[in-house]
Length: 512
Image 1 (tube, one colour):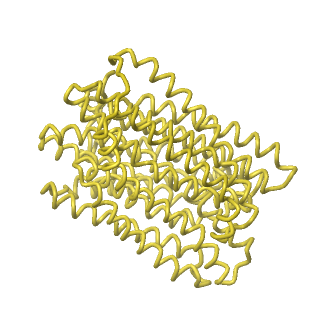
Image 2 (image 1 turned 180 degrees about the horizontal axis):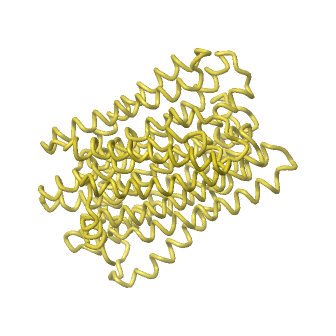
Image 3 (image 1 turned 60 degrees about the vertical axis):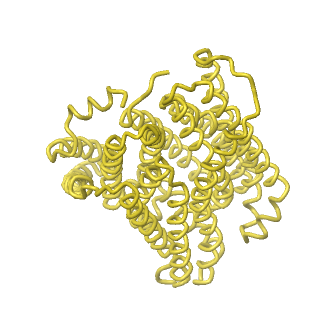
């Protein structure tokens, strides 16, 4: 199984992730046409519970990736297979337990969390997803640890295809019974997507298993204990992020009602924030997630082999790549929020200001994710957890204080999110400097990408305005301006010396 470089792995996962995200946006478009912002609100209220499981279980794939990478680095392929087998058992226990919990306590959860009772069907529909996702996550962690991102990339595409086809199909079929039933059908798409991805990954593993010796099952408590040692702090950290969303689903609607909005108005605003704005903000975050998935095993391997220069080089490269991705993404969504939202959701462009201001958090979320992956790669598992927890406290405090003010309302939640991630990312960078004694080149990593992004946006806005004035078509103006914006940005990256064409080509081609 061939290894892939940091850039190549990021490109593969990033391309698949963006394609999957666009499939997800395609999923949202007919969904919003069918059930509107109100139905999206019911759908989104159940989603934080599903994402909470993803967060709780997320530490194990990272732990698998790290442990498989370390064993592969020293030639212990049998040990790598044993890690996967132990992890599968652990993931099935966690996933099965979560599925049972949702099925048994769904009604009580809705009452306890003060959600709209119509969100019950979405919660029940999504209940079996944790069990299936547990299998998918374990195999993804294994392949990422082998530094082969192709299986993970393809599984993401298959997962989204299953989600879109089944989710939209059921939403359409169930719509005559009511919006809440239709939202439940859409939520079941997550189960279908996980099932399809799981089938693909199992078949892919069977096809490469012949590369490894037949490994008999044996009790090895060291593997299980190390899995838990690595996974627990990572899972806690991910759970903190998910808890942010869960708390938003409780705090934001309640505080909006306190501010004078009706239940329906509060649900619609919450749907615009989570079902529209966050969906679009998550598109560039896909590249960041891909970068982190490639980064952890590569940093871990270099660190365990005591190649300090390589660790520092990969660190600088990762931060530069993260800013090259996040800064233009922020600029694009900030200055083109209205046109982009109208393009993606025709006739349902309400909430563009929410998207505009939420985009400010993109660079800070990406930096927090990248710095967390670096700290995990060098074995500092609890540090980013504490930092993110502090960020969560800041977010909850600001959200609670501002959302209930009528003139601020939903924008208070956005402000809380921004300051929460600013806190987490800055603290992570302080600890990276402490543990690795490295100083990030701010001019190369941040200022140059910012210059390139500003110039790009001036050109994009100019092209959009002229094309729109001549065609009166938002779609044509968006596609043409964004197309030229991407080309201009790539050229500016090379003009400013952020990356050269030769560097990019060499990094993609080589194995390290």
